[in-house]
Amino acid sequence: MKKILYFACFLFFTGTAGQAAAAPPLPVFDDNSEVEEQEAPAEESGDRETAEEYELYIDGQSDSLSGPPVFNNGELLVPLTAAVRGMNEFAEVERNAVFTEADSAYDYLEENQLIVEIDGREFVNVTTLQDAGLTADWKDDSGRLHLETADMLSTGNIRVGESIDDINNKIDIHWNTAFGNAADYIGFHGNMHEFTYTDRFGENRTGEVPDLQVEAAENQVTYLILSSSEWETARGAAVGDSLFDVARAHGSDYIQEEIDGKTVHIYHVNNGSLWFIANENKDVERIGLWSGQLEGYER
Image 1: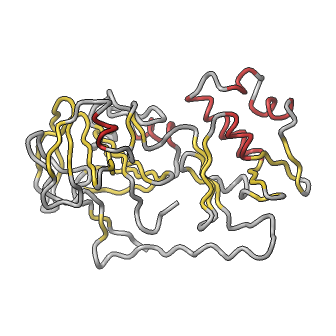
Image 2 (image 1 turned 120 degrees about the horizontal axis):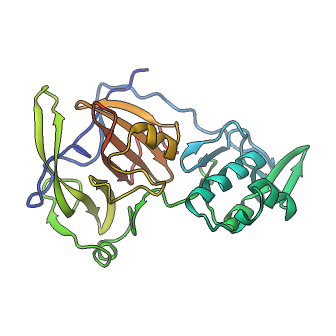
Image 3 (image 1 turned 90 degrees about the horizontal axis):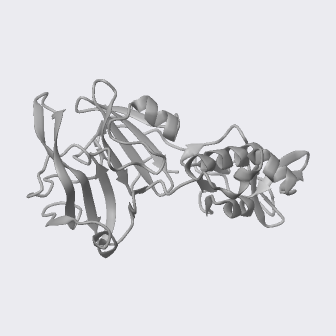
């Protein structure tokens, strides 16, 4: 089904440091748009140790080719190929990972007898990956396992989900009350940059946006918008990179939308999403880290 996405100024508003955004920061669907329905995971039966409906994500990227996670004697494991992939990607952001002294991630697992065989297939315990430095989050209600090589909702030393006090203790923020918005406060940091987009009436609009824009609701940061190359994603993508560069850093599992004359690549990650807005040359102009996810694409 065709999905029609209306982007309600989450990344496109052109407010200045002296005013708050004039529209809700969250992307919404039109009442007449259709969203593809996802089948709910099948109920787990009895004491079954494997379930094909379980899902594995590494930095938000689906890893269906390796096979699903399994439970064995109460322990959660992932296929060996997925474990090696996660460790290799972790080594890209953490050069001093404990296993990098071995010739390869596979050699490290084999030499330390960390590979478990179940019914003729090879697996690695999730605790082994956590000991190696990856983080793991098992969502029991949906049967999803998220492995992360880095904090995907962070940039620099700040992240979505922190309190206003936490952010203020790290960087200087100019806060405005977000009257008429879902947020309580919208903050600005750094210099201003010109940003041009096409509104829904086909008119070209130009305004100024800050290096870093922050939204907070109920004393918690709900999104960060990056408009300067000084701020990078956890995997090293930044304003000025091409969408090809973004795909190399974050993967090919994304949603693409054409919104207000911009190409937008949306990556869903654990507990949120990353939005890369690019111009006609496919160069990234703004990056959004948001605590929400598009309905129908939750993971």
